[in-house]
Length: 144
Figure 1 (cartoon, rainbow, N blue to C red):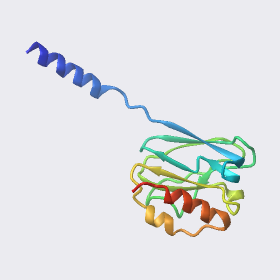
Figure 2 (figure 1 turned 120 degrees about the vertical axis):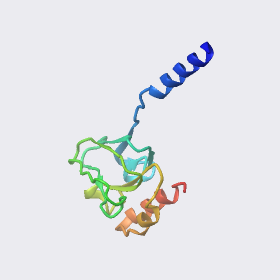
Figure 3 (figure 1 turned 45 degrees about the horizontal axis):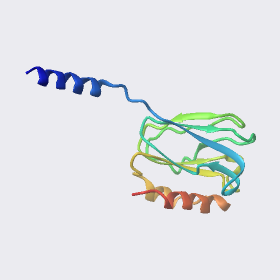
Figure 4 (figure 1 turned 90 degrees about the vertical axis):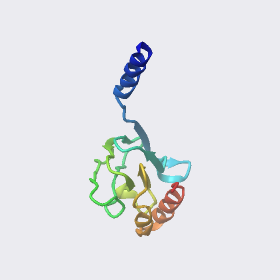
């Protein structure tokens, strides 16, 4: 009986341990491994409840949602120019992210939260210029 009581207490303590959400940093860069005007990394995979902080490493950039590339009913965000912005992703799916002034130059990223429930819909969105190719590369790397 005593062993069973200890095992129950240990199981209860493990189950009661607080869950800590992750905070993933993404750099907003003038030049990175994939060329000019990039988010690094361009594909971010997190769990629901995790936060992604877009860091204004180089000034003149922002990070904001691409409204057409989000799970249905998900909350959007828009960071200020040249400022870090943190957003907590709570709903599963694929989120498209852009730097508004550099979208045509390909400054995009994809955040996958949990299961990529809207991956096909995200792939169907048409983006301008280099953004189309960079987003396709990121989305093609998403595990299904």
